[in-house]
Image 1 (spheres, rainbow, N blue to C red):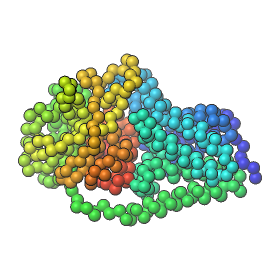
Image 2: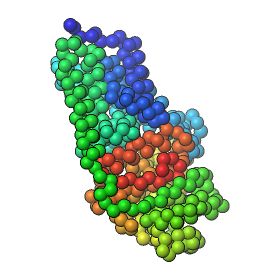
Image 3: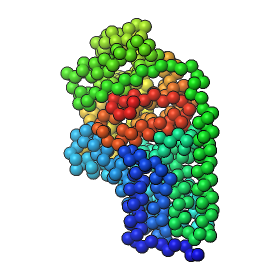
Image 4: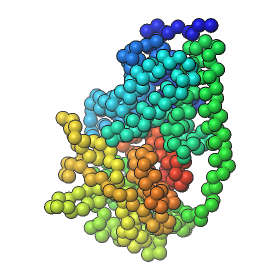
Length: 448
């Protein structure tokens, strides 16, 4: 039996577009996670018999479709809220970001995959294609500032059985299983029956190994092995416009303080407020210190919260996006400065876009923190601020330093009710599996 002939140009385009829609369906808000096991198959079918240039175009189309459905809308919404851009400019910005970090890497993968598709044996095609996909995911996670957003493995965040291997190779190892099954599915479509066995064997082996390892680890991992601590997490749902209005400083404080008062009888070991819980420099503000003292009391639990921090340096003032640990008297027990800043939002990259109204008018840029920092009370724990939770190396640094708990402070209020809220949570959850540490997540709006 001969292999199925290559699809026509129109058919290949149809497969690429359908593949983009299938790819998008894996992630919030659609949550159709089973599609992740075959998400790449339509594109791989479309690539058969194509030149590298034609394949790159099809790969570009596939992820452009996917990102336009599940990523570009929330970037556009954030750009309108954060940078005060008009809708057309916000959409251009969103499309530019998704092209740089999504469509272009996909085009590179497709060009490579088309070449690998010429290998003689189906098994070799499946294995090398999966390796190429994971290499591209790793590349876009580290290129420039890195954008590990909606990697294929993230689609399985609600399925503990399938993601336990992340402790061995991060989300990339989970993605490799999905890439293998997708490549095997493409072989079933385009290869003669007599040569499909190797592809099927590889796909089944990947599924069997991942599920068996997941089942084993879920039985072995004991969440009660260490002494438990009680953490109270407070979500204030504070409007972002209050951050820039001094008149609302007391309102913002009360939005977090009032629910905290109701938690005192539970005697938590730690209270956590989100990123941007305060929007003013903490150190010189005695009124805030008194407010914390009145709220928690001298014998009260420590409070972790996010806010700006300033330091005088060489005649200038540096500003940091920081996490503060305060005792019941409002005194600072420790601070952590965000290490991985978000380009355009927290610092100006070397490339400056004309006409973009930067938010930080004074110092213009925030300063990145240095080494990882551990808070010691009530147990050694480390903080991850906002998007830091999507970068695995930061969590690894904290655990290597001795963190027994990870705490993610974030503010997803800039994204409205968009899918970003759940996509962000999906990626953050992998840090718990990778490091085998409890992850506490406090958001101003979003998934707490």
